[in-house]
Length: 421
Image 1: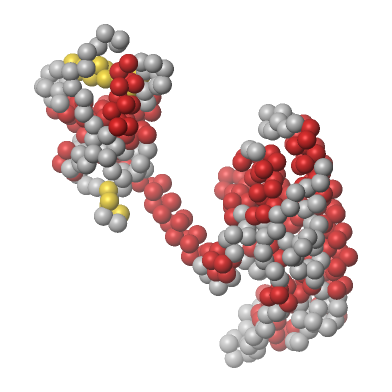
Image 2 (image 1 turned 180 degrees about the horizontal axis):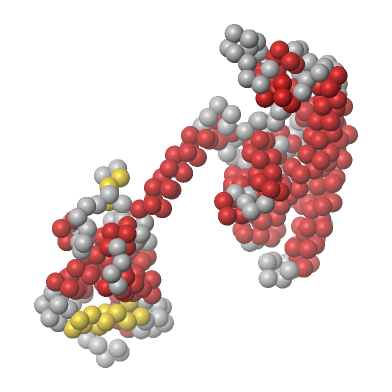
């Protein structure tokens, strides 16, 4: 290839659905467009994905598979179908050859140079519907051809709409609009992903998902929520621990009878995370740290719940108002990221830490509280079948709870500090 003389060079752009494979397919299409009928040509490219997408599609089409299904499951199908249509209609003999990228191959280096130098050109490849093979229709969204696996595109579109609707509902509006600088959302989504879909194979995993979901959506069956559902059974019942305040999610944080429990829970979380970090560090394929970084990592864990200047001292432990909503504080995430360097390892450790925190919450605080409430319900003659029984609108007593105002005084400002060595 070193002796090849460059006769002509050209460049253009291709719009929508940006990817390196799409650009390579556009370059292959450009080369085929200038070939005359019946010609033979070798086309060199450094994209194996582009070669495979063309070859696999041609094989599937000749094997008698459903053509519409093939195209609807393909990415960049408009370009691939145009390439195949040109090859067949012009009776071309095309051989696609893979070359190693960035390895000194002259032709490939020249192509990269031209592509980089002419990024500002306005020449653009546009494919008309009539230039495609087998396709009599196209799917458009927002005026653009959906040049993607159609079913996956629709799934992603519906999922995005659902997530946007969920994040802007009454429960989450303030979090995702006003406090995104405080929380690392990817930790919450990683935990949900771990406990849903193909990962949800046991009742234990499903129970974990339900626990996290209830916390995120403020759906723990506190006495205030139970009064909203069945005021005729619960009346004006107060917290069964302090017997003074209404029990909602905020009161669980501030109830004086639970302050020691929160400290126990924090210590349990730190101790379990300490063991988790030792196991994690022993697996060299996951993470490799020097001795100083290992020491910093353990200090990060031990100092996680240490009160620092600026945090609301009325909170039993720092960040509890976030973590009880299945949210991880962004400041602590950044500190962890600066220690372990790897984004994947940071996300894994943060997710495990938050999972341990929530597990300890259910074990140390919520389950004992539920036992006390269950004893009270028995004394009042409230049975599970009573709660399942539907009552008419005329019998229902409307109860509107007044949210606890204590958390509004919380200073949400992030504070960062260096760990002592």
